[in-house]
Amino acid sequence: MEATEATAPAGGGQRADGADGLAAPLRAPVLALTRWAAGLPPTAGDALLAAVLFGVVLGPGRMEGPRGLLIQAALLLPLVWRRRAPFTVFCVVAAVAFGQWLLGVQLPADVALLVALYTVVAYGDRRRVAAAAAVTAAAVLLAAARWAPEGRFVSSAAAMGAFALAAAAFGSTLRARRAYVAQLRERALNLERANLQEARLAAAEERSRITREMHDIVTHNLSVIVALADAAVYARRGSPGDAVMERISETGRQALTDMRRTLGVLRPDEPDAHRHPAPGIAQLEPLAQHMCAAGLPTGLLLEGDPADLPAAAQLTVYRLVQEALTNTLKHAPHATGARVRVTRTPYAVTVDVTDDGPAAVPAPAAPSLPTGPSGHGIAGMRARAAAYGGVLEAGPAPGGGWRVSTRLDVRSVGDGAV
Figure (cartoon, rainbow, N blue to C red):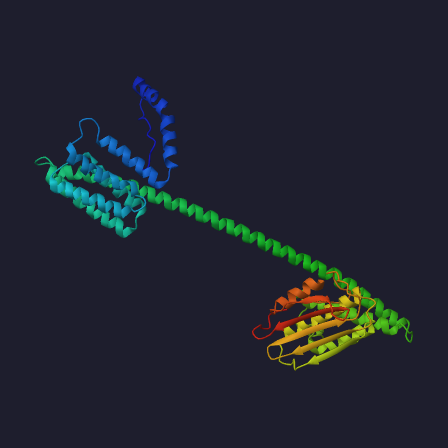
């Protein structure tokens, strides 16, 4: 049962002062004992309560003989498990009390029934609380009928019923307090979740803002490069460097388109959206020609029909080949050629890119030619291959040079991968 702090009745004079004088020395030890008892495990605290009640009911002049001692022990001992099994303990105590009533023995340990009722009201469900209340009401009527003085049945039943109602009220108060504390904890958890979600949304909004700023900066500078390249071609028409300048202009326009598409800011009604669809296997031939023009003769071999491949899978193949060739161009300047082989089988696509340059590991840096999302060297290629269950192999080729190879599983992957 809950320990409550009592206050002295309001009043003046020496009597109130004397009461305060007696209560002051005891207040601190009582509060300390209460805190200590509250910190005990439930079973230990209930065992302490049962021991205290047993000591009280067996005070001087209350031994009641061996039979009374046994009955009181049977009434109080189950209270050790009252919070672990409230309704079971109540049933055991009620059964012992009924046996006591049959024997016609009246004992002070009957208070155990009130403690058990309090526990059921505090911790049990409504159905068990109703059953315990009905049993307690019957016990009150039976006790009053047997032990009430002649002509005092109603007053005795009312007095015992008042004690039972008080126990139930204490239990109901504890139940409401526990529910309120649980509600406060739930509100605190919900508030913590809301704060975490708000922080995540703020971080996402900040990332989106940084992305937009990056898009504005990069696209602005690329637009300037394209404009300067177009102006140089126009000013030097017929010059041997025209092809190079036109290639710079074309590369810049492709980079702008890829940037807009990647960051999701290309409007559906913008003409570039229709002129530059997402690259796929069909664009590998122009990519090979691009590499040849850049100084890396590239051979392309396509095996199988890739027409039924999802657009996202074709984009992955294109980016893997583009990244591998870009690394060769950047990190193997002495390579005299590269070979690309793409093989389509019913359930997979195999990508194999080799060059005849020195076997040096390319740094996982951003390539000099335009790449799509996650274009961060070998790490980016591994992530793209993993999206289709592939394991990227990158290392020295047996006959010299560098080799990049992977096998993409396209049986169950939809068009949502990149």
